[in-house]
Length: 182
Image 1 (cartoon, rainbow, N blue to C red):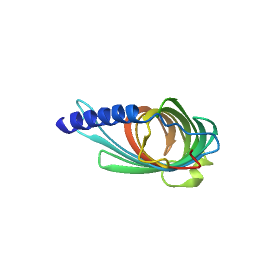
Image 2: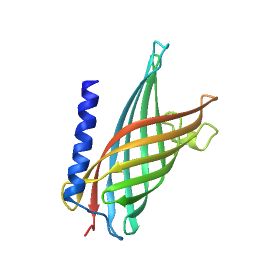
Image 3: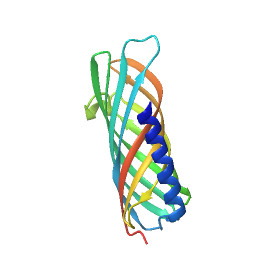
């Protein structure tokens, strides 16, 4: 609990200081290349098992107007529950908008496979995940930003003939390179 409190306090202080010091946004015509990593661990009361998630999501985006980007990302997810584990591969479009200085909202949809089998996307065993998030771009310089974000995901898919539907809330951290940012 102490680690969570310290992490949350540090996150709030960094956002506050960066917001005071800088009001940077991204101009149209700029490119963004980078990715995020995330980790979630879920323990349900009354259940002896815990669920662990790890995700890696490289992405690329283009700012079509000031502060509004569209792009695509890959999604690699690994999770374990009750002694078994699985991995998923996905891809999809996303959009991001900076609405206050370096604070942004982002939404996207991932079309995924069950397991690492790309061809399950073409079969009846694919998945769809809607992602909504809010984050902050902490610009280290004009071209590189560290990006903590909170993410809410809505998943729906079929795995080995079994339908699964759930929501997940998590924390991600990303690093982005901005090319052509003024």
